Structure formats: C-alpha cells, structure tokens
Image 1 (tube, rainbow, N blue to C red):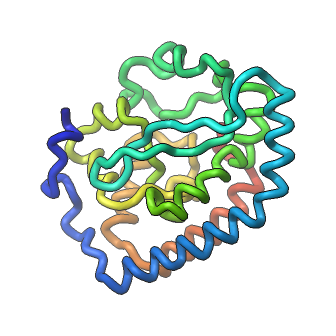
Image 2: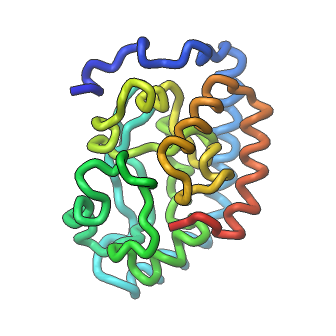
Length: 218
C-alpha cells in the first residue's frame, strides 16, 4: 500500500527541524499535556457520566490513526457517536471523502445528542493529551486521519505526514470542519514548510477563542 512504501520523497523539502527545535517542541508538548490532563480531570468525570447516560457504548474509544511518517497509533477520544457509527461511515462520507468539500459532515446522523455538545467545544478530543504525552502526537500539527482515508492521499496530500499530528493546528484556527481539503492542505503544508516554535505558540493562543466559539465544529 501507499503507506507501506512511505518515503522521504513525499516530504516537503523545508521540513528540517533542528535538534534544538525538536527538543523545545517536545518539552513544550510534555509540559502542556500534563497540565491539560490535570486541569481536565474533573471534566473527565462529568463527561463520563453524561456519555454513559446518553447512549449505550464505551465512554472512551480508541481509533487507529496515522501519524508521522505513516506510523499508526491508537488515538483516544470520548465517544461522541452511536456505538455502530463505524459501520455507517461510508454511507455518510462516501467511498472517497477526499473528493467531497470536507471530511466533516454537518448534522452527522451518527453523532449522539451528548456528542454534539462535546464536539461543539472539542471536549471529545481532551483525552488526546495522553497521546501527546506518549509522543504519538504534538500539541500543534495537522490533525491525524484514519488509515483508510490516508490510503487515498495523492503525493501532495501525503506530505501532511511529515510531522507529528497535532491536538490543534492551522486548520483548527482557520475554519475547522468548514474548510475543504485543498484549503486545509494549503494551511498545513505552509505550517510544515515554515515551522517555528513561535508559530506553534500563536496557534495555541488562537485555539482558545475558537474552542469557545465552537465555529466550524461538526
């Protein structure tokens, strides 16, 4: 498959982080992930109760996602969909979602009532502080996709895999689910080509009002 043949030839020429940049980014990830987990702990308890009361199924789900250089990892999320949602994914997104205007569907019938609230403020993503702490993800980067979607990437789209996926990123502060694939990719490749710790900090700060507004969250 395309991921099995992943090559540095796919990567943007400018994605060459220095050892110092990589070290600073990783330290920042660890510190913020620990703070995020500690601050979110009371929210986790409340969310667990709400999910349990809302619909049958697990509170936390694990999804196989594709990270840096095509490496798969188990992404953690609070369940925001009905338990059989994966069976209906092609009905909602189609066989090739990259041909659609967006990978997100407004009023997705698979989302539970509680899930709509969790997604509105991205609370369903909070468990990914643990993924950041483990090193599978970073606080900032392109959002990780499922393997079947990544297998559909062309040689330009696959450049998203040059860096660790992020809990937030350029897409999240520029329209989120309302962006089409071309607009999203342009933002993410620009982020990769022009990486700096300063840009990461700016994205983190800009994420806060976006979360509060809930704009583009499906």
